[in-house]
Image (cartoon, rainbow, N blue to C red; front, side):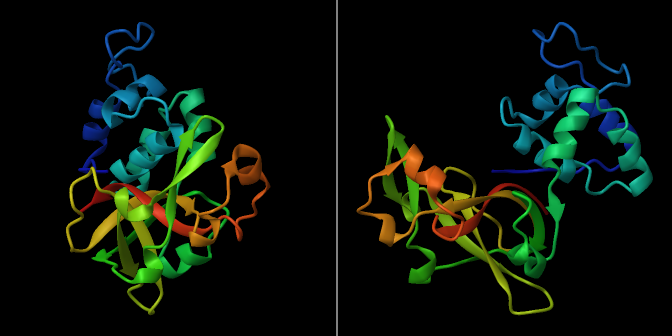
Amino acid sequence: MEEIKPYTSLEEAMRELDNGGRFYNLFTEAQDEVITPAELSKVSGVFLTKQKMILFLEMALSRLDEKAKAEVLSKLDDRLQRHYQNYKPLQLTVSEAIKEHSSSSIIVTGTPKPNTLKSALEGFVLIPIGKTFMLVPILDVYDIYEITDEHTTDKIRIAHSKRSVKLPQQKLMVGGIWKQFPTSSDKDQVLTTDVLERSTPKQSGKRYLEIHYFVK
């Protein structure tokens, strides 16, 4: 997870995004008024995950006015336009995010606070071993936080990788991808790919927002 410094002008955004890609991206050119997946990959540091690249893009453009943002988006090439339409995250309040199940990428704003309640720490992370999965306690991989809605008492739980910097306890915009973590009821079950594919969302454990980026 990393902090994003949003672009503050159209000129800055285009200068950073229309960058020509890495030296081995032979068919991209800097400052040609076309932004390609290779160029977005370079600036975001994300190589293979389209969903994370688009999450980065949306948060990097979050401080631009609508006209400037639309101008940047109009420069995306056809492939990147499709990725954007497929993976564009929703910017929601905490209360809205709790009810949202149609989008896997979410951006919310609030102050993250560590959650030490036992009920929030019971999940397990799936570690693939051949065709099965080992269950590792969620606390071995993530720090668990919660963000409270500014106007209600609704809370959203977020999972933040222990390998990342600690989340500052101040008002942040955070962007992440929903993940389901098995609970203790699944601990003794042999989880295979077939079992996971047959699981319904209700059966597949606790739902957390795995955080990838934040903006102060």
